[in-house]
Structure formats: C-alpha cells, structure tokens
Length: 469
Image 1 (cartoon, one colour):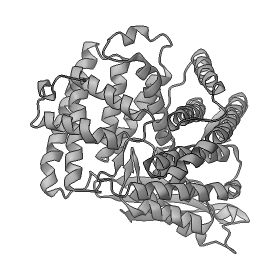
Image 2 (cartoon, one colour):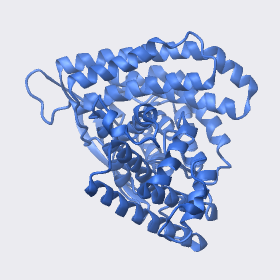
Image 3 (cartoon, one colour):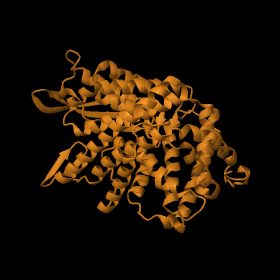
Image 4 (tube, helix red, strand yellow):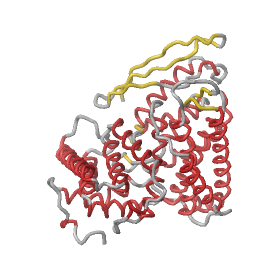
C-alpha cells in the first residue's frame, strides 16, 4: 500500500483528499497513458504525494481538474464559461497555489533535491499544460530537460531517501522528459538549452548505445518493444537538443547556417552522423517489431491500439530525422507513403480515444504526428485528412492544442495550394515556417509567414491571418 489511508494525508484546501483519491483511481490512468511505464510513474507520484506536501497538493489539483472536466466533457480548460464546474476549478487553483508555496519553501530550505525538483517540474507542467498556460508549461519542460542534461553522473547522494526508487529517477524520468523535449523543439525557435560537457555526453551516448546493442531480433512483448522504442526516441531527441544547445547566435568563420541553428562544421558532421545512427536503429526496431505487430493486430482491441501508438511515434521520428538531413522543402515529397501510414495509424488512435472525457494527456499522442504531416506532406488528400483529424475533437497533449494547430495547418495548406499545378505545389511556394502570437484566454491568434512571390525571384511577401478556435 502507498499510504494506510488517504484520509491520513493533510490538505489545506477543501476536498483535497477526495481529489487526491480521484487522481489515484482515474486521472493518473488517463493523463499518464502515453508513458511506457505508466504504473511505475503513477506509483512514484503517489508515494511522493504521501511524503511531500508540494507533490501532494499538485496531484490533488490535477484530480480537481479531472472533476471539472467531467462536468464539462471534451472542453479545454481555459474556456471562460464554467457553470457548475467552476467550484472544482477554483479548488484546483487553490490546491496548485498551495503546491507552489510548498515548492518555494522546499527550495529555500535546501531540501529540494534533483529528484524532487523533477517531480515538481512534472506535476507543474501537467497542471499548466492542462489549463492552457503554454508558456509556463514550456518553462517547466525546459527546466526538467536542462536538469537532466546537467545531471551529475554520481547521483548517489541525491537518491538517499528510501521511499523513492533510484531506478525511476535514473531511467523513467529522463525518458519522460526526453519525450517532452519534442514539444520544446516544436514550440519556439528561441529556446535555450544548457550544453553539457563532452565527458557527460560520451557517458550518455555510451549508455544508450550499449542498451540498443542488446535489442533482440524479435520482440516478445509490447513492453519490450516499448522499452527499446523509448531508448531510440531519447537518442533522437537528445541529438537534436544537443545540436540546438551548441547553436551560436551569429555565424562566424567555419560556421554553417541551418534552419534549426548555426553550427560549426565539426559539430554539424557529428550531429548528422548521430542522426544517421538513430535512423539505423529505427530500421532495426521495425524489423524486430514486425512479427509482434502482426500478432497484436490480429488480437485487436486496446493492445492493438497500443502497438499502433508505438509504431506511430517511431515512424514520425524517422521522418523527422530524415527531413532534418534533407536540404530543401521538396525532399519531403518522397515520404508520402510514410505520411499516409502516419495518418492511417493516427485515425485508429483518435477513434479509440473518442469516448475519453478529458481530452488531455501530458505526453506525445497523435497531435505532433498529424501536425508534422499536415505541414510537410503536400499531397492534398493525405494532408487534408491529417488536418481534419486535428480539428475533429478538442484535445491537448502537453502544450500541443489540436484545434489551434489544425487551424494553422489549414491556413498554410490554403495559401500553398493557391499555386498548385497538376496536383503539385512548387518548391518556391512552400512555407518553411509560421510565426504565431496567441491569446489563449480569447482563443485567438495572429499567424504570419513569408512566401516567395515566384520561382524566378527570392523576394518574399508577408502573409498574415487572424484565427479563432
């Protein structure tokens, strides 16, 4: 048992114990469902809640948001019209406010070690993302990612408390934040990652590569496939995060200017070789997963959907890495078969989750895969299907909002297809990036991009649109 009785826990807000119990019985299973070790993560959060008042109140706040979501199913939490759900929303804000107060006390007392900092980062991220505070949620992910990147290799001293399992901090939390790092990479181009020493980086790569060297030729269970999928995901994400951390503000001699940063030629060569290595491991993973995937598809049900989600994520990562290595916008056309498969898999997942009441999970689900496809696939049927799935239901995965991203991708598709010829969008008319300024309370955003005026000119015109979602 985690605690003898939830009633033994002390809360400073009305119904705190009831909300905590709701998190234990329901909320945790829904918002943590994208974690490969959901049961372990849930257990650690509940254990931490029993001993740490900051985590306890943050967990109860998430339970209160669950209760509010039950009163207003499939709606997003920054909506102004709350009706009878407002009581639970107010309690959620009170509980979260107390959690922040305890976090500050723990930090000032010097007793908030790295483990507790990561747990409070994670619970704070969940609350801020669920309530639509994208910037604050973003900052929590960035803090957690940088904590892990600067983690001292000898963590024995910070893992002394017996109620926590060190293996969770050493393995599952870094795995969680590696997945969340993908959200950082898509949120803004001005983020700052803290670089790590070459020694720390070599240790990290060696650990991952040693693990991947043990990947079997055939997976015997979904859990085994998920473990190696998450290792590959960490590998791919850390390659890109490291390249961004090494990016310079201004180009100098022997520097190369890329869409994602400015790197020295040596750093670029290293980064590209690591990306190719990640791609090789993905291809190995596919071969190992093939027989198991076919068997699980024959069984159907939830286990089939879980298998599809694993494949969806690693297929998306494969195309992302390939796209980074490619030099121009038209190179993505050769991945249409994979884009079509991504949309097909995402459609199964969206249909399976249609009855879910909350519309929120903390991690990667289908939104990024659909948004990436909608932005990079220029085959109209496949692209429009991805956009339709984004707009089909209100859902949020971490800081990704399906309705917002669906509207953005719809606008981009519209202005690119103005210049479509024989079903093809010429390279010069393609939009490389979109800037957005969003007001989450009013649910409005201003979108801006640059588009070349013709094939014969490098001159660009500014395109702009106001959207409401």
